[in-house]
Image (tube, rainbow, N blue to C red; front, side, top):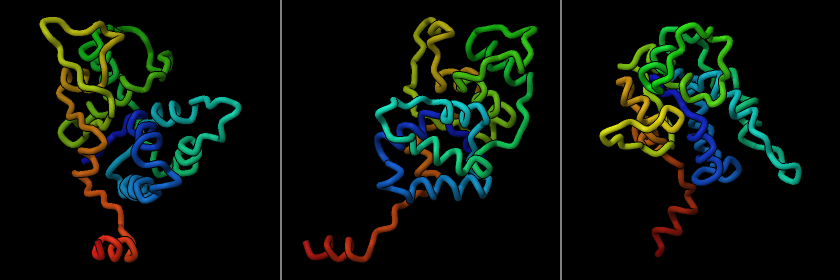
Length: 186
């Protein structure tokens, strides 16, 4: 199984759950699975992370630094098939792309590209995102308002979140001996 990560996975992990400086094990785990070929970032996701701006009074973005440093291992080394991108826009977003060349498309947001890469092999690829699941009632949301989980559902691509990824690839934070001793004495 190949897991394709959305930008939201990295940003939420860094900002909410696994800060790079506090829980480096998570980031090392992502890198090990990238090196093993189990998870990758499409080039558009990498560019989205690297292109994020930080305010002048903020320190350099450690997420962008981490991605830049590990880009070779993280990046999905494939060309995107035009047919998959057209299908993603047409069926997933309801926006026909008939005669637009891939090179003429803006790659931000990276969402349609992420789903299109998963379409290359939907049985052996999963999209990982922290975007909220949308429930379509009798009508679908407007194309500009469709989120990754809905687009994946419309196209038959499996979509999971970070916590599902953690379970499926069995992420565990190693505990120090001192921590175990502290817990045992309480």
